Image (cartoon, rainbow, N blue to C red; front, top):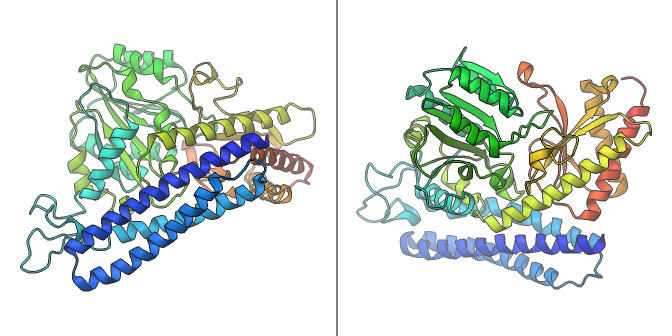
Amino acid sequence: MESQSYADLMDDFAELVSIVKDSLGRLGQLRRAAERHARPGTTVVLGGVIDNLVGEYGKIDNDLRALQKAKIDVSPERLISEKKRISDIVRSLQGVMGSMLASTDWQSPSFAAAEYSQAGTQTGKIRGTVNDYKRDHHADANNYERRWRREYIDAGFRWPPQVFVTASGMAAFSTVLTTLATEDKINGPILAGKACYFENKLLLEKIFPGAVVYVDEMNTKSVVEAIKELQPAAIFLDTIGNTEDVAAPDMRSLVPSIIETITRPTMLVLDATGTATSYQPLQDFPRGPCKLGLIVIESLLKYHQFGMDRVSAGLIWRTGLTPLGLFGNRMHLGTGLVDASVLSLPQPNRRLLDKRLRRMNRNANYLATKLEEHSKGGQRTSLASVVYPGLASHPAYEWMSKRDFQGSFLVLKLKPQYCFTAYYKKFLQLAINEARAVGVDLTAGSSFGFDVTRVYLTALYAGKHATPFLRVSVGTETRGEMEKLGLALTRALQKLAYRLPI
């Protein structure tokens, strides 16, 4: 176990080295650009701040290089402590760096000036009435979008997909809905998976009242039958559902079946937040034109910030042959991502992200298996079952077991007598207490994709669109830490069972 934990930590240090190296490079670019375009007094002040930042990143880089040379006999506890210390500093500096990179720039940059430009580091790149208003679009977003497309979308020998970064995942979804509504693309019924995110369902029903028909996306045959009957104008699916059933449709068979079944132009809108790079939808599309258009949305709060949760951000991408005015609608709705936020995002890096997903997949499978064994162990417990697509008990196991990533969160289903909000909240408190007792970190909070595992009561206020459930979102902990977490959670579930009625 210790050797595996040591290998885990070496990978973690390598990830941090890569992020630090990239930050140092971006600060060097800022220094050169500021020297060319900022006023002399500003250059002096910025130079001092840049020097301080470079110095702090340099210290971290030195510490990381030394840690990478640590022998395997160095205690995992010491290495874990160093990882947490450095990760927290890097996360804080990431926001400072983003602000610094945008510090000379303007939201309404000038394209000409008698003396000094009001375009900052983008001087010479601004064109009047073209890119001189950043609420519409800006170069920092364009640069991120290009790299994101290159790193994260497998689209070999195709017309390049178009990528649009947005202020959040919900901003991405609302931009897509507005585009479909205002461009008259919805001229028929809409099919949506039952496991779509509840806020997306709410918006769908408000914008297209009476048009939404829900289908069980886990049953490919029933979806195909519904498509044959209704010939929908649009289909909305989550690649992994953030619901109590953690629905994971068989996308590799479902998408080709949809393409074969539709007889009219239809838009497929996928929320790929739960799968990130592990599912590549274009692999299931023909290379030439077809009647099924594709739009993909993601929240960039989850996996793409490498656990930093630094800024709210989202993204839309579409195939090059999907005729929609997403660019113009993002501009008119004001749902683009501001420059300082774009610059606070870690640069897209497929190698690092895929390695991170593999770690989370390993940890989720370990914890799900451990807790499932606990639920069947015969001892007194409040746990009835565990829901996770990587378990043989999950209805998606047949196809999800063949993937490299089955998701990073699992659902704890309690026995009926404990299925009340008060017991859910008590479990969260017990879990934190037990983690503290066994000496491992655990947090209670929303979202997923972080370094530290989280527990959360999800969808508490979703109303008719979802049932509240207990979610465990694993982090990137070492194998040794995961064993402690398994112990803490099982103890919490046992203690909840022995409590007097609330």
